Structure formats: structure tokens, C-alpha cells
Length: 282
Image (cartoon, rainbow, N blue to C red; front, side, top):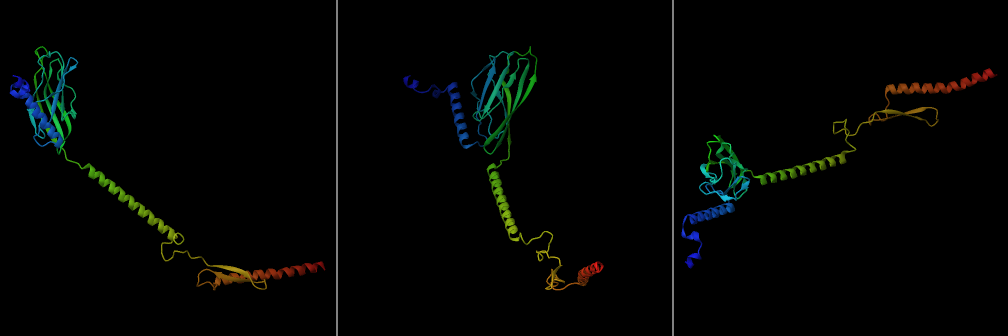
């Protein structure tokens, strides 16, 4: 007896011993799965608790036969400990998955007015070996309040898995970063080249000349008049193109002659006027 007392009671069999062994094996399997990720068919850790009369129970394990299996669709009967709860009391259930990473809202099992929960559809969204999202869809049935004597002790729960496409977020961010750096480098090089061209050709380029061989505008030809050595006559000098630098057109010659005549007439008219004035004075 003393030797037997030194060993845990569950080691000698019995209903409680078998349940403890199953819970230990389930916890160990789920711990290994959480470390290395899930494989198809692995049990997903699931907890449950209920609420009634403003009180909540502690979390308890869902048996492996009633718990979800990774990436496996199935429907089972989930046990609800509601034996001692009157039918007129509202009863609610809460579920938790994957070590409380995903927890449901409080699901009404019975509202005490004849409405009872008929089925829970649990939808898992996953990719690879990870669960990303858990959603719950509820189906109710309506009965007679007077005919309902107690809450139901089981409810149908269906597990449905939806695989999502894996997205490599890190590679996408790296690509955007490299592309941004490359575009920035191209912009810097383009600005530097444009600045160099403007510096080299600033004094040569004229917008209105598209021909690169005529970068400098050609000056128009004009005539410059200067006095000769006597100071009496104007001597024309033509400035402009190289071919016409020392030549004067016919129209220019005519203008020069007319201008020279006007100048000579004016100079001759001054003494005449003076003589006329002198004669009158005499």
C-alpha cells in the first residue's frame, strides 16, 4: 500500500486514469505541433467554457475526438455540460483554438425562451502550416418554451478548412526597395547629364535655331557713316556678313548720294544765305 501510494493514482487504470492519460497525450501532441507547425490531420488544441447566471466556468479541454484536425473537414457532436442549468436560464458557450490564439465570441446555446443552438460551423483559413483566421456561423431552431425542460447537452459542430495562397511579403518588399533605389539612381544620372549639357552649351544654343550648324545668330548688315579727313564728307562703311563686309548695294549707294547731296546743299546754302543777308544789309 505504501509503495502504491507513492505512485500517482492514474497509473493504475480506471476511468479517471485513462482520461488523464489522454489529456496528457493530447497536450504533448499539440505542443509538438505548435513548435514545428501543423501537418494535415494533426489535432488543433481547443478549449471551451460556458456562462450562465452571470457566472463563467474555467477553460476545459475539448476531447481529441471532438476537436478539429488540421486541414480535415469533419462534423461531430460537441458535449456541453448543462445538466444542472434550468431551461429558463440563458446559456452561452465560448471556444478557443490554437492555444487561445483565436477565441470566439460568446455563442448563445439557449436563450431561455425556446430558441436553441442547432449547429456551429467553424471555418478555418490557413496556409502552409499556420492558421490565419477562425470564423463561426451559427444555426438556430425555435421551439416551444413550455415544452423545453432543460438545455441540450450536445450541439453539432462542423469544421471546414479553406486554404489561402501563400504570399511572400518579404520578397515583395525587397523588390519594391530595389526598384525604388534603381529609379532614384536613374533620376540622379539624368539630372547630372542635363546639367552638364546646359553648362557646356549655354552660350551657344539659341532656341529659335534648330540647325546645330548655326548655333550663333548671324548679324544683319548695316552701314556706318564716318567723316573723312577734311571733315566735310561722310564716308560709308558696311558691317555684317563676311562676303558683304566691304561692299555696298545699289540702294545704299543711292541713299549715300542723296544724303551727300543734302549735306552739300546745306553747306552751300549757308554762305548763300549769309551773302543774301549781307547784301540786304548793304
